[in-house]
Amino acid sequence: MAFIELSGVCKGYGRAGHRTHVLEDVNLSIEKGELVSIVGYSGAGKTTLVALLAGLIFPDKGQVKVGGKVVKGTSSERGVVFQNYSLLPWLSVLENVQLAVDQVFPKRTSAERRAHAMKFVEMVNLGPAAGKRPRELSGGMRQRVSVARALAIEPEVLLLDEPFGALDALTRGVLQGELQRISQESGKTMLLITNDVDEGILLSDRIIPLGAGPRASLGPATVVDIERPRDRKALNHDPRFRATRLGVLEYLLESGKQKRAERDVVDAKRDVTEAPKPELKSQAAASEPVQIAEECL
Amino acid sequence: MKSNLMDGVVKYVVLPLVGAGCVVLLWAVASSSFATSLPSPLKTWEISRPYIVEPFEKRGELDQGILRFTWYSLIRVAKGYSLAILIGTPLGLFLGMSKGFTNTFDPIIQVLRPVSPLAWLPLGLVLFHKPEPAGLFTIAMCSMWPTVMNTALGVRSIPQDYINVARVLKLSAWKTLTKVTIPAALPYMFTGFRLSLGIAWLVIVAAEMLTGAPGVGGFLWQEYNALIYEHIILCILTIGIVGFMLDRVMGLVERRFKAA
Image (cartoon, rainbow over all chains, first blue to last red):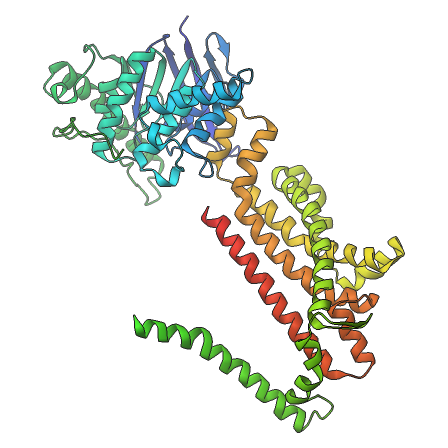
């Protein structure tokens, strides 16, 4: 049995009658130590999927299991990196990380907890900024704090909800490299949610498209069979990379088209047919520079 | 640069003085024409002089320098206001955190909130038999509501992100309160504290007038009874200036917390 198991998961929001069905019949299994990416449209329900796994919300139908147990709430076994960092602005970098540590390791002395938190702050290369407040940091640095906070509780699983979505392309590249390193060093099970197909392929063992919503469900998984460490520049010329990207993109575009067509039928009487905007970064010229100096340290 | 300085002087010194001058002029005209029982500005100054130039003098229980009276009033306000904050903040936190608590207590709070200090004071006298605690009770009852309402609003406005963080990190209830809820709500709470202080200062006058306690309000009422109307004006000006300064100080504190 897989480490993470979603079977027949449905989730909707709103009252009966006006209910929006976000996810429908989502099935997913992730093995221990695997890094899986889920790529999909904005608003397709990616964040809902993360919230379900984190235990912040619960499925209407189906089951979410982690480590063989049904998810009944949040747990320090599952670390979450939120899309918008979600750092507490009144705490310093170290305090933000330590807040998590204090809660998970109450038996350690405060000096030990502090050292533990500091280790993770240094792991994301923020040692010199440990005493700063989040507002004094750039977006990329904030996201690193968020990663450090999630890792510091030493979770079994790391859930990353579009972690680099709000960053510029260059910073993104640097942080992708760091995540790759962390993932290899720690060997943790990770689920990466992204809207960037290239990012998904670069980082993961398996990439799975999430179809367009409403009633989104997962498409066929593609194993990314490219040796690590992966270099973004070289990857662009790799035929396996291109084939994977094409496959995932085609699935997503096809599913988007289908959903639009369905909606057109439903909305035939109304005049509103706003197409979902795919936020997919599929430009062939993506990922140029990788050798960027450490971002503003 | 120089013209900026001049602009500042005009805006913040000259124009306000002109405004005050207009009111004094109006007052002088009124006192010398249709409102003859109103003391003129000059007479007010002459009669009030000993109270202003020797502001801390104590000549008798009800014959003291104006700042000495102000000090008594400030102490009283500080006590009543502290009481209001001590009761109002937790009440606001509960209202903000619990829907059930809000449904239960919000209606009665809305009923009690508009009650005038003049109505609370007799009840305070009935409850405590002495004017001093009755005054504090009145100040607390009247001034806590902005703290209650703003604290509750602040807690309700905490971004879902922070709440999610607290849940994902499995913070204990106490940690969530001290590390997430209160810091996030603090700017709102300070707005409440500031409005509460304004009300506490408003109420002090009424409380002292009714109880005859020594203080700015007590002095005002006593001088009315003694027919020394100049001192009424002195008291009004003092109350206004002190209230203005209190608001400014709280405003500065509030801004500091909002920036942090």
